[in-house]
Length: 322
Image (tube, rainbow, N blue to C red; front, side, top):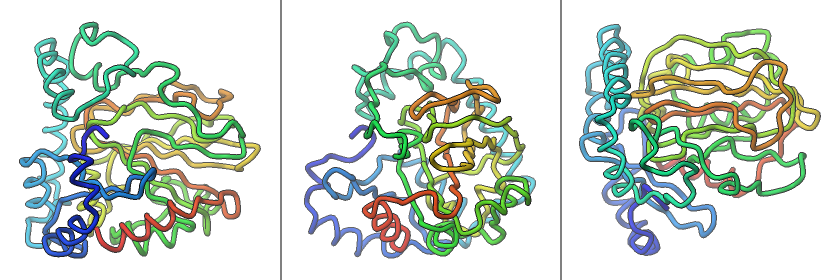
């Protein structure tokens, strides 16, 4: 529950719905809202994600309809400069002082962290910390069940067309541009799309969702837009414009799976800890993000993945009202 408002408050479902209706309204392109409500899969309660006020205000100013366009070279250069500067700051040994503040603000569970807290030389290494081997057990022992690629807020769509209609509102989004390959994109026409969004307080190593063999990783240079839902629901093509890396997993159970790791504002780097040709199992580590929020997008070929219905229903509901 780290990084959210209190569970007691979120359990007042009637009050939550009323506040949501009166103060937020529907999430539309350019809408002046940066609040994020997350449905807890265990109990169905809506929980508001905890975001520092200055971050929320900055997102509103940058991405609302009346703001200066953010897809200009000047703004892109500013965001890149900010991200690089923050990365330098958080690799400085002085940044260790930020670790206990971060843990307290987000109510992080430190019992699951592998290394002692005083062993981290800077904040960035704490940010991409490892967890104890038993901290994230697989939900199913069967390789026919795909698992989450990260600690995240998850959106799942039976078809890529559904995702474009309900969630991804960028003007020029195509799978060919996302993957930087028209040939590979043809495989996924009519297939499923799953989005794993990591907030800054999340464990920032990402993992293999299906058994298989890894391809070479294709790195794509790009911008540093936020992956906050407000930006995704704007006219900016965040998933296409941001820096990212594309790896394919050839799986006996799921066919070819595209694994796209997408950087974001304040993300210093995307680091792969696997190699091409490696045989991997579900839950194996694939890499990690340095400081900042970030996202993984997985594409599945048509007919290969059956999504749990609660994920589909909640993704559709949140997409229509965020």
